[in-house]
Image 1 (cartoon, rainbow, N blue to C red):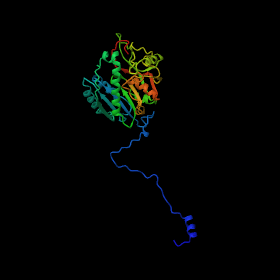
Image 2: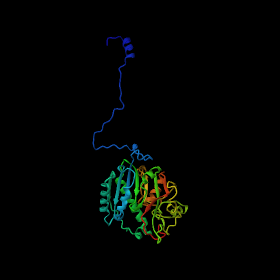
Image 3: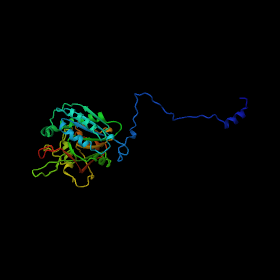
Image 4: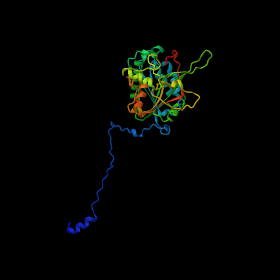
Length: 337
């Protein structure tokens, strides 16, 4: 302090007081009610097993008790690591013992000796007031299609909203009445790295000589046609187009009528509508708001509306005409898709 001004200036020119700033001091949050989720780390990749990507298998159920035993027998044969799989079910408007059989079957497979149980299972109960029966005439009659598809869309959306967790990378929609499918179906589908992917759905039916006619089942997976677009342009926006009925001749190309089960199973085609028997979806597609419309979206609802919505949002919708998943024979009348 007794230096001359010149001495002070010379001193300060070389010995400025150091100042240290730390712009990266961590912020610590100790409140247990606050949770942090980093979705940047959740990926849907071809290396799903190596990256331990989680799969959510979802199945909506109604009067499904006769099919559940076979359903779970096939489910436990899946070779994708079971500790990375969560199961979700919605039971709605059932008049049989679906809920009781579902609980019993879930407990059976989760306690099987020598098998790794699935990571978790969630059962949702929600009735929507649907009065459509489960026989062929009730389910597939023309008049029932619009209300039925809208109700199914609501059921799928409730199930998805109640079970999707931040750590899920893939959503696998699987119907209860599948009777035969490859054990590596998840690995097969994931390896193709598509936003939305569906196989071809056929069924076994045997004639008097015990020959399998290999019937085609799912006519909801289709390629759009100019005829259908023209038809839709003349319909009220609330009308739901239903495939396979004389009331609506759409002229669409059905994947069910294509394919050769002896050919390359990974041959791909682009689709504009899809059925709901077996769908693999990247979780981010659903997270982005693409769900199953329970109203007429571009004159389609539920899974067909889902495909239309996904394509509008810029996602790819792909079918595998030669990759066959076998559905139970519904014993439907010829010509009723």
